[in-house]
Every structure is written in C-alpha cells, then in structure tokens.
Length: 635
Image (cartoon, rainbow, N blue to C red; front, top):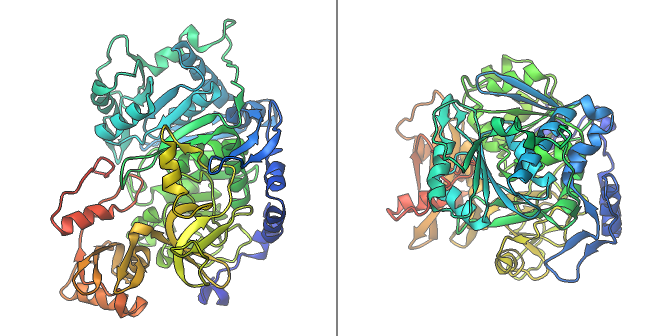
C-alpha cells in the first residue's frame, strides 16, 4: 500500500529495509568523504587484493588526467575470481544463464575461473600480450564475460562491440582500436530469430588489416564460412593442450597490472559525431564499481542479482560482469528479449530463479507496461526486495507502475544516474533514501555534483542548468583512446576545473537531482528551456500513451516549436481528436508553452540498440533532410 507520503510524491523505505541495509548512514559517509576524499576511497580500496600497495591515493598534478592508487599493483580478475576460488566461495554459483529456448547453464566461481584460465591460455598462445586490444562481438551468452575476463587476466584490453551492430560500426571500432583478435559467435538468438554475427564479422574484416585471428563460438549451429589460418572454433581451441599448463592443469597466471594500466575501452553509441573510445583502468574502476554496487543494491551473500542489460554496454561491464564478481555475488543472465515468446518472460524468470534484485531500463518498463498488469500478476514476485532503473530518466508514470505492479509497493527503486564515462553510479538513492519518482536523488558519497549556468556559477534550487562534477572519482575515464585532446575538449574545456556531463538538470530544495536530458535534448521555446524528457513524461502520463519522443524544430516566431511522436498502449486504437487531446494534456501538465505544435501517432521510434531515442533521425525525417549515419539504429 502506498503511504500518505507516497501519495504526496515521496516514498519512504520501510523500517525493515533501513535496518537490514549494509549502509544506513549515507549522510555520515558523505560527510566523511567531504572531509577527506582520499581517505574515504582508500578505505574502500583496502577491501581488495593488491600485489603492491599504492604510494599515493590520488595524483592531481596534471588535471584532467587524474590518476588513482598510484604505484599500486593489482588485477581486477584476481579480485573477481582468484581470491574467491581460494575461499569458501569456490563452489558458490557465480553465474546462472538461461537461453531464449529455456536451456540453462550454471558456473560456480571455481568453474568460471577454470574457463577463464583456459581461454586466457588460448589467447596467449595466439600471441596476445599485455596492452594488446581484442574486439569481442557476441550474443548474450556466458562466453562473452568469459572472454572479457580472460583478456583482463592476461593484461589485454578488451573492446566489446554490442552483438548486432552493423558492419560499418564494427569495422570502425576494430580499425580504431587496432585489434588483432576478434572473438565472435556463428550467430545469436533474439526474439526467436538468428542474428548472423559471423557474417557481419567477415564483411567488416575485408577492410581490417590488423586482425590475425577470429575465434568463433558455436551458438546457433548455422553454416558459416571459416577462413583457413584465420578462423578457429572456440570449443576446439579449448580442447587443445594450449588451453592448459605444461602439466595439463587448467590454470593461468594472472598478470600483475599497475592500477593505471588500461582494462577496457568502450565506444559510446555514436548518436552524435564520431564514436568515442572511452578508456578505463584496473585499479580505480575496480574500487568504484564494487563499492557503488554493494552500497546501492545492498548486495548480500545470499542474493541472486539480475541486471537485464547486455554485457556489451557499460551497464553490463560494470554491473553484470565486474561489479558482481568483485563482490562474490550470484548473477543471473538471460539471452533474449523480454517479450519472447510472451510478455511475461522476465516475470517468469524472476519467479523461477528467486531473483532478489532486478535492475533494468525505463525503456523496457514502458514497453512492458503496454501489456498491462495481468502478465506480471500471474507470477510470484515476492523474492524481489530491490528494483533498479538505468539508462535514462524514468518518467513518474513508469516509476509508479514499476513500484506498484512489479515491486508490490514494498521494493525501493534505485534510480541510478551515471555514464559510460563515469564507469560507476554517480547520483543514486540507497535503500535508506526516501524516493521521489523521476529523481535520481543525491550524489553517491564522495561525488560532488552541481547544476551551473552558462558561466559555471551554481544556480538556485529549482532552476535548470548544466550538470557538472566538481572533483575526480576512482572509476572515471582516463582519456579517449588515442585522442587526449578530444578528451579535454569534450569533458573539461566548457567549465574549467569541472567535468561537464553533457546533461541538463535541476536540484530541488531537498538536494535531489532531476536529470532533464542531454543538453541537445533541451528545446528552447520562446526563451524557455523545456526538457524533452519532461514533455515525454507528460505525454506518457496520458492513459492512451505508452512511449513518446519530443523534438524541437525551427519556428519563425518561437525560435523552436515542439513536435512529438507517440506510441499508443496495447489495445488502444487512434481516434479522431486524439492528437489535440494529447496537446491539451501536455499543456495542462506543463503549461501552455510546452504544448506541442504537432503530434504524430507511430508504431515505433528510431532507437539505438541501447534503447536511446535518436531524435536527430526524427528531426531529419520531419524536415526531409538526410538522416546521416544509421549504423547504431536498431532494426
């Protein structure tokens, strides 16, 4: 039942939730971090194994090229696997996986470590050495995190490309990273159909001179072309003596890495401009992702945790692969789509596996909302104790559906704001935090966020401005691969001494942050700044609307006029007068200035494969202009 406070827009946690939480003194921790930032993060770093201790926690001598745990020697994989195998967690489940067809595979920490060691030996036999780049282009199967971990174990830098990106996108990323090995599958399954990954790799490699070897996991069994001397089957390699030590053991020595040695590069989606290869490192990233996951999602030994993202995105890197394994957690991974074969697939999996913590995206929640409450209500979701949201601001209507229908009004929603670049949660609730639907709440302890104006001055509570971060954090990106000047200009030049997130936001009188959207997703109408997320939230709050996208188009008088596209809920048919009704509804919710000039009802919206609406494509189509690079557009 929603409390009186909930009805007023604030949802406090239950006393039981607060009492049992690992962290229930957030304000105390924040004050400690403010008083001594380096001591705060040093205390968290002591939770992990270091082969050599650091001599300096934070080097600020060459901003913005900050360094963390300087002189420290470690390896994130040693902390993800090796140390657990040497403890009672050896036989604890690390990963549970289910395919679209219902096939199940499980890996204990011992079994996962064995697979990683063997594949790391295979990579070493192919000449992969510390600092080499390896491109991974796979479906959502266990071999994907195994490949990531194997690379990191031997000091290679992995570059995961989401399985399903086009030939052009894959080619560009292989070429930019100068990878000499590609790991892929014959194909992958999604919505019962085969995505032909190997064929895409073959086409991309026609113009990639650096690639010497391609390792192929047999997933679908479909016929593929295997080029002699270049292409090798994963299973065959794992059965060769090269996968083991000279004595035949399935072990592999873990490379000792400097804290600042690169761990992985990950390309941003490329919705605007050339994709950027964000570079993260072993030491600071390890400390940041593990600490944030443990405190925000209150990870306990007995938990079963499910993040629905693909490992190919930063959410998957930080909070499917590395974060959970660092904490010795049992994670669940599902191969396919949330509505295959029916819209209850996710809810049936939560019930089947007893999932305690469920972390997904607002896009998915809004999509599942369209099918109504009957599908989730068929399942026992009582194992859930925490929910999470990631990827974009969640509109209050979707938040309430998620909270009431999935969480049964008892599971707090951890609405996290962070980026590929930040590597870890930056603004987020914790289980003890009173929640406001649509707000990511407050900065994580140690993070100093602020909303500023064009001149970098803090704005008053309630006013909109640019979201910046005012001090370094451990999991921050170190640079853009092979382009340090772009790193400086993109993130640090606009507001000297501050990291510019590219997002607009406001902070209310309680110190809660409300992310409005990307700066280029803010529409200025008659001098008023209107966030596309706010307009879209207003549209989705209408009972007929499932999803919405708003764009600004040039207007002779207003400067810009708002155009909106909406998808109706399942079972709702468009009727005469509905667009005008929706325009009036937005005017009622936000004021006359926000009323769209035109509303078009559509069946789908152009999105990247990570679920972000490509507004530039909508703008181009509305004005009959070239649509530009569509390689990141989902089919």
